[in-house]
Image (cartoon, rainbow, N blue to C red):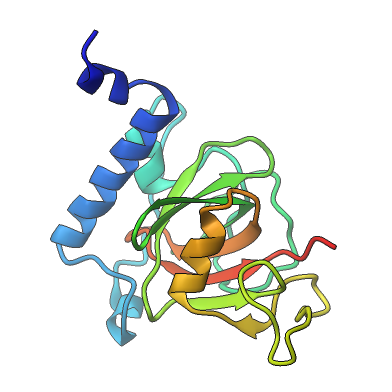
Length: 184
């Protein structure tokens, strides 16, 4: 079997498929950057359980949690629901490519690729970045409050050990907010 064929098998193949779908979305002008991202179509997507891994990565996970809200809903994953244009997933973050990360839901659902940009709000607790005094920065919900950069987020993602809550635009796959879940 050729090396190219092996690349399309298993987890790596799903990641590659997710990257291709994300690149296609960006090529069509779908971004989560700037003030026009709220003007996007507000209809949610509805993937069936028979969707291919690349279709699931581009629309929604079979696990994690979602909500029409953005930011903090106080949920730590578990279950899946369709509501509004935002999708929120809690899980372990992994690096895919510059500006492209993956979150592996805590409940074992399908990995979800997401895009980050300078417009993405990134909040760290200790692993992504620390507070201004160099210490842990967390809110009452247990998630980070320190403002972090995309470079810091990508560096932390390469460790495959940081748990985050990602709130993303369901249609474009662009992350609006990435918050680190603090683990002492």
